[in-house]
Image (cartoon, rainbow, N blue to C red; front, side, top):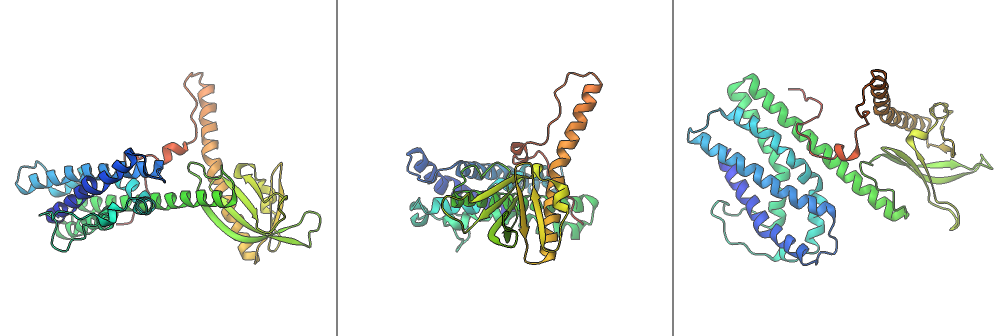
Length: 345
């Protein structure tokens, strides 16, 4: 472990000191055309990953010299909460690497002085070093499996489970990030500037037909997008002056009308909109209804709990501020501990 950790940390140091330094220099001179907040977050997360693993390497060296006051399992458990910084790096890696590689030519032409800690043939290019943090967590998981085989203790299995939870959490953050970027791309394509919102992700999308209000026997092809908080019905083929989309917040959807499905039809109704949609099959229509209802219940659950807490607080005559549903900013911040479903051992 310590041998691979030394090579890994050496690679991260080269990534930060050589390549990321060039990116920061370009940013400082204002020469990045696509400079965004995402890039700023990714650069910061790379530096945090470096600090996290330098601290781990320092403690591993002390353990090898017999100067540590704890065993290898406890040592890794102590450092595990800090590794949550990997989630930010992994979730933004693909988008940001593409962004900077297309603008900073030095990243692909830079030649490096040989690092004694990097083995011969080690890929020290920008792309080779940038991907190593993405792959590193699985290496720790493989090492904990060896610890479980060697020691078979409860603490070893707990460590393995916690690393599995961390990997799961990072994967979820990656999926959320990809979906968030996809929503932004859809907003630009459809010319809906405010479509991309914090925490708004795509749950489901598909091609359906919309029954015409004046002539139910006729229909128009549409794309239906179910987001985490709203539904968008996009009319692909329509005249220039016609409204090209219908957007209904999920909390405004009439659940009774939605549940009243018939054959391959289902209805999206609110106070302002009434849309009858036709799926290719009755089964697909039922799947759409189930998915939409599930997402509505997820949204109304936190609101109901917050309302109960406010009611209890008022009845007790306390002056504390009412509880509110979890904010988007909080759900995208780095947690102090890994809050993911427990994995089976």
